[in-house]
Image 1 (cartoon, rainbow, N blue to C red):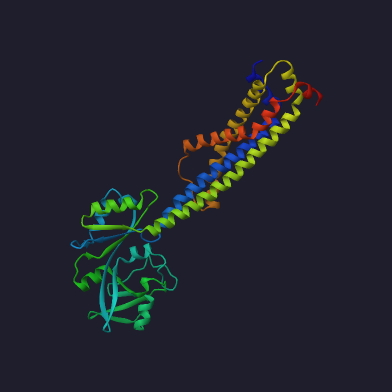
Image 2: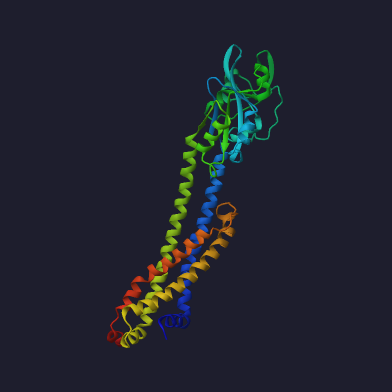
Length: 370
């Protein structure tokens, strides 16, 4: 009987101990795989949500150029068009109300308020509202300054506008603005299709915002696309925190798996002292003992790893919607599976190093005495 046969024979005879180690490794690997998949899904979902929450780039004309409404189509037709979520055009100018200068912004209403969900009226979302051509929305401080409220009439450049509503205070520049439908302001000011700027929201998960900015400048010569680094930095920090949490928890579970292997191997060796003594007495060398136990732990580790990968994928699909409100829709990564099986093998080997070396050093006479 060769060493491989002895190892497999031992596994069959002590299958309860072997299954305990398989389960220990399987739990560790399954937890790691499921968490990696859930965290990756959370990373993508969080990245998309942050990319949707406000602009992450601003497009402005240079000193001799002028943006027009149709330039939005050039951006969407460019190579980064599939990564663009919202393009919100603005025409910004100064108008007089009661002999006071005030900033007014012509906007595409739905795009603007979808891109900036923090702008509300009475706490209500504005992304689906419909405004008439002669209606405006007042910022909180502007409304206070002119003592106007919902339903009042405001005269701008000899044209009367009805106040659709007053924005809830947000403590930013929006408090001091007046918002009007874009085409209404263009007509009022005689500006044709002119645009002052675009605020652009792109999905940075798939395409870095710096790359988006470069392509926009190529698609629209005579413009500058300025990435908003603050949004990108916040996105990266938030995603990094999720990844660190998942990594830490996975490491804790993997260490528990190592301890399970260690304690089970120590118990198994204590039970097999007499057997090891016989092997040594009939001429087995230390390397032979190490080989027998090494083959056993490799088989156990591979079984635990393969089972752990399969169960981990299922756990991610089942638990993802409940633990993190995300759907695991991507196909399983072969690379992750191979890495998980390698980690399972590492768990088995690391947890058995001390017990196996201890077994190989047993003196035959001392073994028989025990």
